[in-house]
Image 1: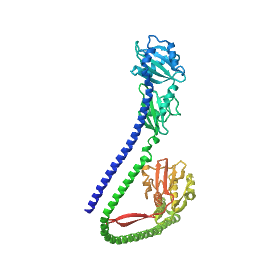
Image 2: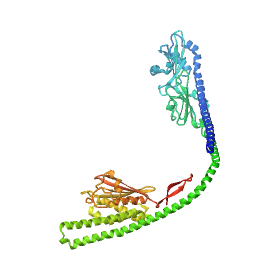
Image 3: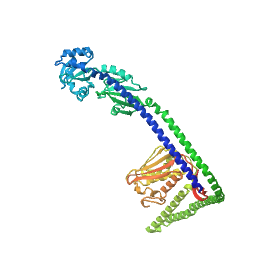
Image 4: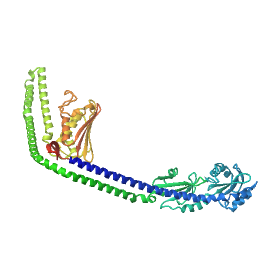
Length: 580
């Protein structure tokens, strides 16, 4: 009951603390988002103000409409008159500058010098005239290809007794850029920011960026993508743009995110969250401390109650452990005794049977019938197989009981010695054996020799008739293990038997086809497992077989014991521990 009340109090306090932390985090995130949004609004306001100032420079042309009506409102206006006006306004001093007068249908009534046939053709695509036709009092168009520098159309409409007329001025980009760049330079900015005036084709008409040429596009990364949006943040740069009235032009302001949002990024952004994290850790630590304090009294009482029970159980557990250890020692001693008996007492009758059958065949062979001699040969062969089987079982049982301590073993040297022992079998089969570089590992040298001898003997024994046996022995080494492979081009086996062949006495072929006891591969598996490794087989029937032995490079033998452990509830449970 007391534990339930303590848990309820802690849970209620934890929920309250988590709720407060969640509210704090949401407010902190909203505050930082509002601060960043406020900076973006300020940048946009700067762009709007700059656009209004530049637009005001051209809106003065509307105030001159009455004067234009007097000058250009007569029934006929001559080219000489247009030349004079253009000359007095300085348009003819500019490369590609001109002045043209158009009627309500867009026909040219008169034009100054510089108004060429190309200018006449460009009227159809003039964005300035399109703005006039859509109802604007004046229009500023895009930069048109014209001569070497291009030309910008500035069109103003004014009334006359003969209908509305349009005064079209061809301005050189350098003229526009010169006085607008001064206005762009007056826009407040941050370090690394740039201001641009671009037309409807994103061509720069004026800029504060010395790296960008008038008549080109903005060369900042992400500009092409950013200009598709009123405001956009891309590749660490913030873009904001505002269109000018009665024109295709736009003011574009750019600024690097770092200086622009310095007040809400970096340390300014991280410090509040670090403080929040510190508060959260303190709150969690306080909850944990409170939980421990409230549970400590209950735990002390429970521990005192169980302590008496545990003391009694420990005495029994220690006695059980000592009994198990003594039982294990007796079992090992009995196994060693059985192995000794098997190696001598079981093989001695077999040796006598073989001796007597061989002597009988020598001394009485002439008087025995063919069937009698066949019986003697079979008896002798059976005794020999039984003796070989017993020797194999002894080797199998002694892998763990009579293994030698692990020491550095050169697998290359071991393989060379095995090939010397198998020299007669290699020569009889006409085999080609290729040995790669083999490493030195920590192992039992004698068992490594048994392992290699069994694998190579298998490869020699199960070769295909009429095919020269080819055996390759190689190894790959990683940081902690070696993968030793023995590959042959023999008869192979069905992959579904890849696990079965490592069982004791398992044979895939009859004794008349291939000799053997069925213990060799089982012995290889047991040797690999004793070394903390494993062995696997892969094969393709009538093509090849590959045996892969995975062994640790550096290791120690381990002994596993099962002991009785007393848990916190005072109950006993079995736990297995492995000790080096």
